[in-house]
Structures are given as C-alpha cells and as structure tokens.
Image (cartoon, rainbow, N blue to C red; front, side, top):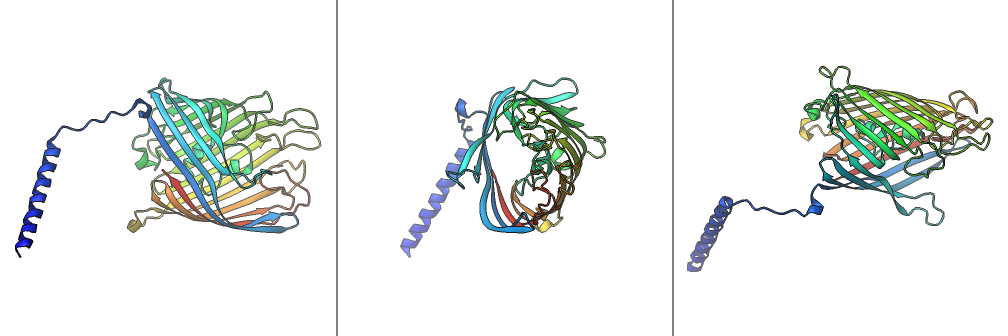
Length: 404
C-alpha cells in the first residue's frame, strides 16, 4: 500500500513538473528557424493516376480484343521555385508506361512535361495578374479546360482525345486576367484557377509539335485563348471561351511535298459553381499538330469537326460532406468532315461515373466508357479507312488520383 502511494505521488509530481514546463514554454519567446535560401519559395508537389481497367478495344471487321489490367497511367513530379517576386521557374517530370518501344516494351519512362522560366511583368490597366512562361510551357487551352472538368485522371479532354494537339509545347507565352481577381472564387465558382473577375486570356508562339515530338519544320504556330464572364456580377461562373491556332503540321506531305495547314477554331460555353459544372463546346480544325491528317490524293489537310458536352453534379449528402459527385460526358468527332477519303468516318464516345473526393483532390473515380465507330472510321486520331468496320470500345474503370 505504501509503495502504491509513493508511486501515485511520483506520478502527480511528474505531471506538475510537465505542466510547469509547458507553461514556461508557452510564455517563452517564439523560436525563429532560419530557412536556407535554397528552400525559400520552393514548392514540391506530385500527382498520379493509379488505374484499373477492364474492357475491350475495337478491331477491324467488327471484332474486339479484351484487356484486364492495373496501370499507372500518369505520374507527375513538380518542382517550383520563386527566386524573386517577379521571377521563378517550374519543372515537371512526366512518368508514363512506354508501349511502343521494341527493345523494352512496357517499361516506365520519364520525359519533361514542363520546364520553363516564369516572368511576371505586373499589371497594365485592365490586364492584370500577368505571367509569361518561357520554355516548355502550357498551351492555352487544355490546362484551362482541365481546371473546369476535374477528371483528367479518367482520360484526356475531347480535343486532345481526338488527336488534335497536346497540353504542352516549347515556346513563349503570356497570360493573365481581365480586371483583377474574382472575389471569393472558391465559394462562388468552386475554383480559384483562372479566376479573372471578367475573364482571362492566354497567347503564345510555339514549335507546334507538342512536348512529346521533335520539331521537324521551320514553322511556328500561334495559339490563343480568350475567356469572358459576360455577367460577372450576376453569374460569375458563366464563361464564354474561344481558342484559336494558326500554323502548319509537323510532317511534310509525300504527295505535294508541302507541310499541311494546321488551324483550330474552338468555342466553349461553361458554367461552374460549388455544386454544378456544365460545359458545351464545338471545334473545327484543318489538320492536326503531327500533320498526319491529310487527303492522300492531294496532300491537303483534312477538315475536321467535333463537339463535346460535360456535366458534373456534387450530390448534397451532408453525412459525407458533399464529397460524392456524379458526372457524364459525350464526344462526337469526325476527322474527315468533308468526306474526302470516305463518308461515315466519325466516332461517338460516352462516359459516365461517380467520383468521391477523399481530401483536396485525392479522389476515387468509378466510370464506364464506350465508343461506337461509324463503318469507315479509322479509330481515334486516325483518318477514315473505307470498309474498316471497327468493333466498339468498352471500358469499366476505377482510378485513384494521388494529389500531394
């Protein structure tokens, strides 16, 4: 019994000393930690898509091949550094699985997605929050759309899925807002990216080949995006956007020994708030970035046309803090809209699914995707082939998006 009392006294005395020590610490001066210069203004982040897919891919003659696999479809590692308030840089490594290499097929490869200097020239009247990317940077459209449609982990956006252009290229660009930043953007439109009060803009001059191809001609392409909020005070989430591109394709035609035209005209109407996202877009092109969409008889670029609709609704379920969303998308695209090679060469793509945001962009997505091809369609990114009769594509997909 005596031993027990002594032990209790010892415990109480220890607690008293601990509380006394904490009270002294709380009254002490704040501890200052010197951050090394190399770490000041440094930001490291990562994003990856861990994918399970089970489905079939259409083959000529109305046939299909099946697959059932886990995959790391993308892995991004980004390092950003601010040297001065107006000067910085960004590097993003893109890790992907190489399915084309004959020597080491299926191995994971690294390539540079972004590597550019950031220069912020300051505001100029109505043009605000300006930023220039010098090097391998963002092209004007896809990063913008991917911050409206949050499911890049499911697959690429409509115009990239069709094979027109990529999300990054080497060149020089300038972007910014109209009229400053939208107040309380997260609460009003659900997104703080591209938060110009009256819209945003982006213009650049690039090689035109994209970040995963070499530049094979002397031509440069001009790309630009203009976005306005027509009733910013009433419906700040409503935006009208136009995307344009003028240049030449990256491969010379063997028919006329000339580089084909490469022209893009794209428009989108979008609406965002914390609960609902709606988009509708239409795009027309002459050719594509690679220069592969040409009339085999003349070498001229094929005229294409496509449209896409997307909807996302966050389900109001307080028990799970409104983290569950239902979404759907429909794409239609025709590489040969003038039927120069063959008629009935288009495809229709359907996507539907559920997404659960576990924590700040770390999400789980479950979806179904199907693609039906017209009788002469060559496939996504490919010119029509008369009598091809591709079977349908179908896929059930589960994705875990890592975002840190």
